Length: 305
Ligand code: GLN
Image (cartoon, rainbow, N blue to C red; front, top):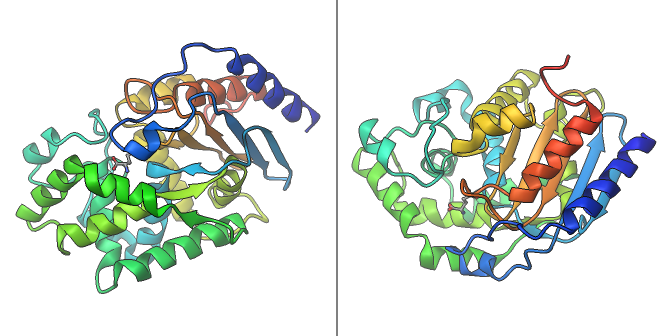
């Protein structure tokens, strides 16, 4: 796809001139220090071609994008029983909101808001040491990407352990409803480390190939689960901006406060973008714009058939 290389180069060009790039996450001190000028984008196609542009081979903190991989592991392990622990409705609330959790007796709305992701990590931690779970998660991500050079940045995990008071509040709150089965410190230890996985756009786009559901792609979960994970990415992947992302882009995506977004074009492509500056909803500002530009120029949308 000659067009694709050209389009990615144009997007990098257009966005590098942008003054208003959003603000990197400051509540995790290690992330606040990242250069907001960084910008990378990568695409893997169903034909097996790889395209990269900008800082696409530089590793960044994938943060909440990791929730896609833990959800896949949880569905593989627990199957539909997982839905007893967490819902699958958009929350319409900030990713770290505590408000809804009280109204709904400690049952998180979906697996992508923080409370829901903590509940998913808690579910797959059962009977394991956090180290074993993180080993399994790294194995999953490395296998999906076909690349063993993917690691957890312990300083980022430590940084968030020191400042993650909101997540401690959410975890203890769920525990008070007996909705967390492990001690909150243990579950959060695993959760902060899962969020601290680092990958480049090139690696992340490769790790997302299994979600394309196309022939020849790595098969990490059953095809019926691939459809469901995409559905949840579409409806919940950008928190209280999920509707806006669906409107502008029309594709399933999952963002992280490190400024990364993984976006899937079912049957066609896996896209990863990284720009550390965030918008008001905690999603990458220029990352969202880049995917909107790419999807528009390629004619990619789940609504266009
Ligand atoms: N580790 C972050 C947190 O729990 C992840 C949030 C995100 O990427 N949206 O706050």
